[in-house]
Amino acid sequence: MTILQNPVSFESLDPGRSRAWPCDQDLCLTCANCSGACPVAGIDDFDPRKIVRMVSMGMADHVASERWPWICTMCGKCEQVCPMGIAIPDMMRRIRSLRARDQIPGILQSGLENALRTGNNLALPKEDFVFILEDVGAEIAEEQGFETFTVPIDKEGANILTTIHNKLVNTHTEDLKHWWKIFHAAGEDWTVAADNWEGTSWGYFTGDDEAMKTMAGRIVENMRRLKARTLLWPE
Amino acid sequence: MNLPERQVVIVGAGVAGLAAADEIARWGVAVTMLEEAPRTGGHASRYSCKALGECVACGACLADERRRRVADRENVTILAGVRISTIENKVGFNIHYEHRNSQEPPGGLKADALLLTTGFQPYDPSDKPYGYRRFPNVLTLLDAEDRLQREGVLTCPSDGRPPERIAFIQCVGSRDSRIGHPWCSKICCGAALRMARLVQYRRPETVVTFFYIDVQTFGKNFQKYYDQTRRQVRMVRAIPGDIVQSEGQRLQLAYFDPDASRATEEPFDLVILSAGIAPNTDNPSLADMLGVRLNAAGFFHPHESDEGRKRSGLFTAGAALGPMSIAESIDSAGKAAWDIMNYLKSNGLSKF
Ligand code: SF4
Ligand code: SF4
Ligand code: SF4
Ligand code: SF4
Image 1 (tube, chains in turn yellow, green):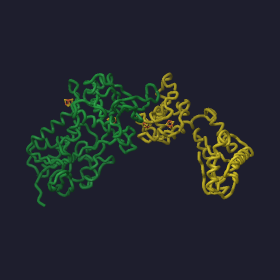
Image 2 (cartoon, helix red, strand yellow):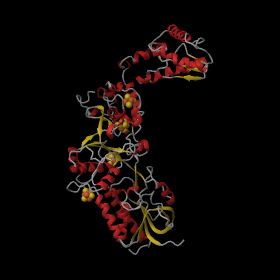
Image 3 (tube, chains in turn purple, yellow):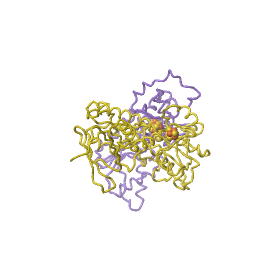
Image 4 (cartoon, chains in turn yellow, blue):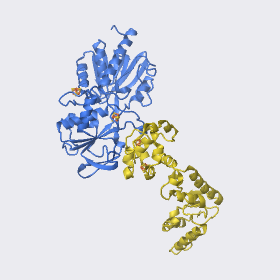
């Protein structure tokens, strides 16, 4: 943070702005319970109490231009302990939403753009996705007691539709097996959608409500299309 | 039932009740005090003198003095160890009570005026993540006062030794809207700092750290006292998130160090929690019997307010109205005593 090097000019503060925020950060007592509970407090001097104060003083734009809001993991521990019940993770999202989309750090924005364009963060083509699922399914079928196992892709009328985290068809394919074997052993009627299967929604982390709406809408659409009764959305 | 005539009944013999009884009795009016505890004095009498060679205006002796004065007043009757069972609030009050720990039969009283000085309930911090009631060396400020008064020095309950390192944690159960206590308890910053200074005065090598949000305390000469305090007590502007007990009953405090801008842990021998002032748990049933409403926090409305005036002859003073220091309670009681005398006089109930 560059606060000390570049002292704040009081003319730039706008406390009236706090009224336009969805959470009551102007109730903050500056007790630091949030900072004491935060698992990443201290990384590059990150301090949630300071962010809450800065926002309530009308310095949201200043905070938005800094690295701090992106250090937060959005875990919500701070909100749990805050004596004033201030919704700090919501506030972090709101701050992140103030940043130009091409200024979002890391792979968050490119992953999200992939998802909006292709239905998943990896831009994995449908044929490749189906191939990976069937390949993992074939591996399971080689195990004792799972000889009849197949992956029910795009099956209409199943009880459960499950979404897939992109890492499970990328670096963590082994982790698909646990769920699937439980479904099989339980005799569950389940399915996976071949399109728009992505379970993560990085608009949550980038503060992009529209993107979240789109991603959630696609899952709803899959539920309708496949006439599934129960949604399993483990993300 | 034939009840003895009493002009003024005071419910609660803490410092506010005693101060009011002293004033009213001085004007020649008979007073009866009903107190639930076995003795008078209330929480105020748990504090001991914090003078550091010279007086620091803590107010503890004012409470003692009121108790002594009332004990000498012939027209004050004290019924301790009793619990009110019913109050009829008609023209005047009919009050019935029971003895809590004896076989004595229940009793009754008639009063022209009733003063509520029921004080407060100290907040019980068991639900906070500080190990209160689990770790022997975590005390509330009032627990620490009791130990100081009983033993003359402040020691660790685990081994009876004086603590090398003490932490004070402020605002425990106050300024906390999650538990419905959004108010500042007003007295704990001053009380904790006076305790810290006294311990250091008697044992200068004691290291004291004071975890706080902001210091809320007022009074004459406070700035001078506070400036001295800041030189001797380490002030950390953060409330710790957690305490764990390590080997040898040492307490490990987790907090965000604002100077170093990082989360940190630090060992202490004794942790003193400034547990806040909560409304007396009897307030709802008393309010119900009297047909008055409590404020949103659960304290009584002042009798001179619209909310408090609904029933005539009913008066309130002291921490029954909300957090108050000893000196403020005495002022509040003096005002109530004056209002009671005017009430008796204007209703032809007193020759005064
Ligand atoms: S939500 Fe962010 S600020 Fe709050 S505790 Fe988690 S990481 Fe820290
Ligand atoms: S815990 Fe809540 S009230 Fe305390 S400093 Fe953090 S945001 Fe402010
Ligand atoms: S006011 Fe407090 S410090 Fe002063 S003499 Fe009385 S008890 Fe002692
Ligand atoms: S007096 Fe001090 S410790 Fe007590 S509630 Fe107020 S600020 Fe907190």
